[in-house]
Amino acid sequence: MTDEPVHEVVRRAGVRRVAELAGVSPATVSRALREGTPVSHGTRERVRRAAASLGYTVPVRPLTVAVLARFPTRWFFAEAVAGVESVLSAAGHVTQLHNLGDPAARAHFFATLPVRGRADGLIVVASAIDAVEAAALDALAVPVVVLGGDMPDRPRIGIDDRAAARAAVRHLLGLGHAGVALVSFDAAVPDGAATTADRRAGWADAHAEAGRPCGPVVVAGAGIADGDEAAARLLSLPTLPTAVFAMSDELAIGVLRTLRRAGVDVPGQVSVVGFDDHDSAGVADLTTVAQPVRRQGELAAHALLAALAGDEPEPCELPTRLVVRATTAPPRPA
Image (cartoon, rainbow, N blue to C red; front, side, top):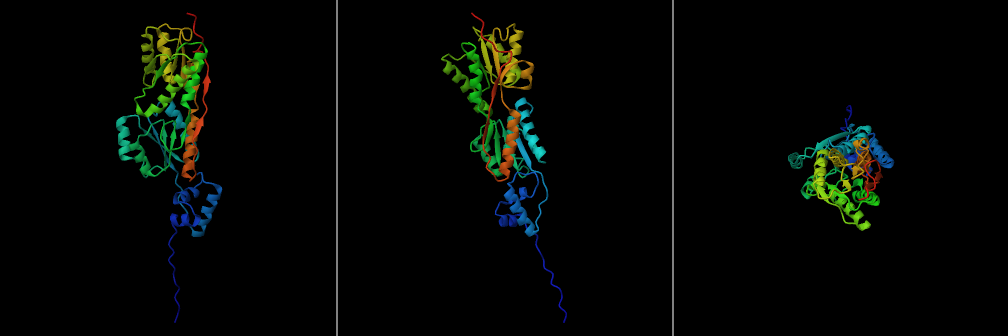
C-alpha cells in the first residue's frame, strides 16, 4: 500500500489576523505596511514582523483626504488648500476638494456624504459645522481636523483671531485715532460666525483698553466689491472716521479704492488696516495683520496623517504679526 501525499490547504491571513498578532487596529496595519504614512517606528516594525510571520502583504494604496472648503477660489481657502495638498502629495496621497460655499451644494453633500468609503480622513477649512452636520461626519468614522474654523472636540489648527484684531486696532489707536470704524463680516452667516465674533471682540477690546468709544460698524460681505460698498456707507456718515479696520484684505482693498476715488487721502485723512496679508496687500502697500495661511494647511495635513496613524494630534495656534505699510499714519490735526 502506497501512502499518497497529503495536500494542506492554507488560507491566506487577513488584516484582522495581523492586527491581532501585532496588537493594533486593522487600519494601523494597513498604514504601517505602506511607505510614507505616519506610523511610529516601533509600531511599524511590530506590524511588519507579524505580517511576515503570517505571509501577509497589503496592496499599496494612497490615502485620500477630503477637504471641505466654503469658497475654494478665494485667497484664504486657496492658500490653505495649497498647504494641505503640498504635504499630502509629497507623501503620495490624494487631496479631494469639496466646495461647500453654495447652500444647496452643502445640503446635498451632508445628505449624501459622497466621501463615504472614498476618503480616509477629512479637513474642514474655515467652516462652522452644526450639530446635524457633525453627526453626519461622525457617522463616517474617519479622523477630522479643523483648519481655522469651529468644530468642538476636533483638533484645530488656526490663529487667535481676537488677539490679532486687537493688535491691529491698538496700532491705530496708538497713532492717535479717536475711534476706529469696523468693516465686519456678517455675523448672521453661520459658517464664519466664530471668526467674525472673535475679530469684533478684539476690536472692542482695544477700544476698552484705551478708554475710547468704538467707531461705527459697517457689515459687509467678504470680497473687494463688498469693501467698495462699505466705504460708500462710511462716506455717507455725518463724520468720516479717521481710521478703519477691515476684517480681510479684500474688504480693505475695496475700502481703499472707493476712498481714493472719492478724493479721500489715505492715510492723510483716513488710515486703513486689513487682515491676512493677502498677495495684493503688498501691492496696495496696505498695513495688515499677517497670518500664515499656507502653514496652517500644512500643519492640518500633518495632524490628519498623525490621526490616521493612530496618534492623538495636538491642536496648534500659530502666531500672527502686524505688518505696517503706507496706509496708516497719525490723524491730521482738526
